[in-house]
Length: 413
Image (tube, rainbow, N blue to C red; front, side, top):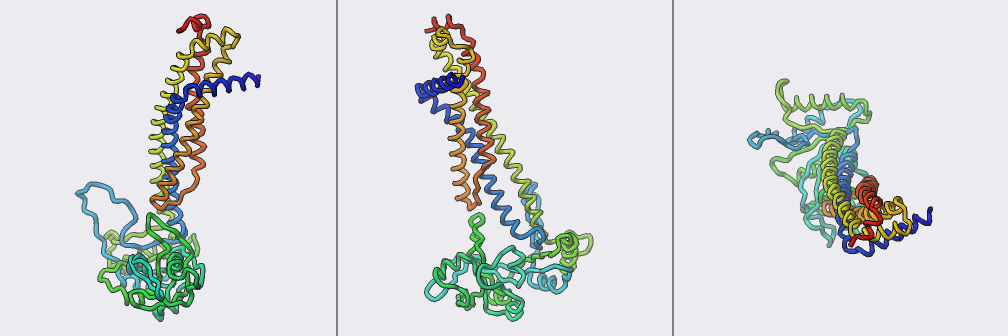
């Protein structure tokens, strides 16, 4: 039995080689459908991984108070978007002084610039370094970690010390071989002693998180004196079960600082990291559904094309089938041969489609600085779908070949 099956598989491979151009075109048709599935799913997965890793680093027990809610504006273009006032320095100082909910730490910060040039002796960076002014809690609340040295402390903030913490890429640019701790760098002509280096964070959508300088907020305010600087507040709650109460108290406190009456809507946004992760999951779920719809339509076309080609193959090899039947081949032997041809072509198309899909997903991830991971689930689905496509496409042609009358087949020209 096994020798007969092995012989049929050899015959199937021989038939495939004899129709090489047709086989290549059929494999490409199947590969395009599988490529669409694996490529889109791996791209969506990379997007989800990147966004989730950035938001989850904040921790599920952290929330931010910011100028606007983090959301996509929808509705008619005639709708007028509400413009919230900036969160100014007086707002954040009042909040820091007033908010006293238990087991919480308030982080305050602002971006002085995203395009600073930083110098150390004769070395200098391109003007692409972000400068952040913050208090002692910002680094911890943001999920950042110190790899070398120490973080900003309450004495640095209270005394406005000329110290700073730098990102890992900035260390590589200015101190490729030296230890940067206690070295002095220059930012806009002001000197700062490096006291710490952040652990590598990576890039998000082209924004390098490791080219940054974090300094005491008052020191940053003396350098960056723009009129309408927008500040940010982050609150970390040490006990997770107190998060809801801490958030409600923060909203009430900030509404009082803004001078809002009870019937007015809040003119600021509040976001929790787990809320953002839930929104990301909802949006990526919609992308997954769209990917499946596109892929199913493409694969359905591949199924029809493969079945049509196998039916043509049955018609062209009618005489061969007649000869084999006259020599004693049974129906199931003929059917198995044609079925194996279809399965082999389907699997070749699946393998090629998986390889092309992974390449597309990897290229998209590199282009947009996304975190690419091997799409194992998509590969398993692709392999299964390629097999199912081959089975569906091969059944009818195989049955048709098996049912051919040997006498009529021998007469076929």
